[in-house]
Amino acid sequence: MAARNLTTKDAIEKRRSIRKFKSDPVPDEHITALIEAARLAPSGSNTQPWRFKIVSDDETKAKLAVAAYHQSFVAQAPVVLVCCADLHGYFEGITARSQDFGKEGALEETMMRVLRDRAEQLKMMNVQDLAPGIAFNVAIAVEHIVLRALDFGLGSCWVRMIDEQKIKDIFGWGNSMHVVALLPVGYPDEAPAPRKRRTIEEIILE
Image 1 (cartoon, rainbow, N blue to C red):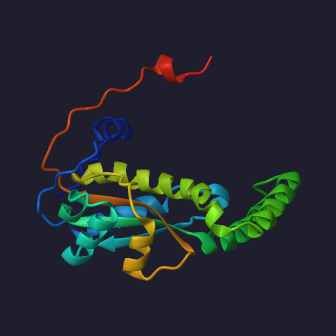
Image 2 (image 1 turned 180 degrees about the vertical axis):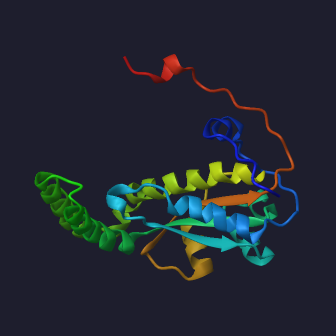
Image 3 (image 1 turned 135 degrees about the horizontal axis):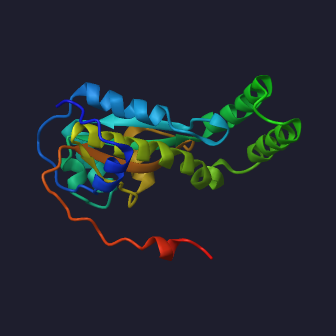
């Protein structure tokens, strides 16, 4: 299916959490385009900690559905993206990127010192304690995927109710990989109505 070239506004307004998918396979080039959208996302200090496992085989999808507390639609989706944060890669990246910023003149010297000090402090902390904070970067990349998917008529659904350890066991991952979310992707077989949202007045602080 050709890309629809939606405006960003269109994509934001049309996005829905899809939990029922058609059986039609998703072309590899569309999945590549989704990962490319994630690759271009911003991240703190340009550390780019996101990593994605592309799962399309029925056996592994069934295991992921069990690890998502038996949410069956996870297994039904043609493709499931396992969205992760590479914790050790983050630490390596924050030091390297701080040096890059210095060469590029992107930051004042005072901010460079703060960034270097922060990098050293983070290295002294328990990597698992830092995982939720690092996951914010991955969340930005995942939302890029969610919105880009609409260009191809694809739907998706954030799945955060997961047993992370079970997912890590499926793939043999250690503590350096933090599973942020599962993202089932496919052609929607439902058209949910928009859910009620707060008004602009309710979300702007006085």
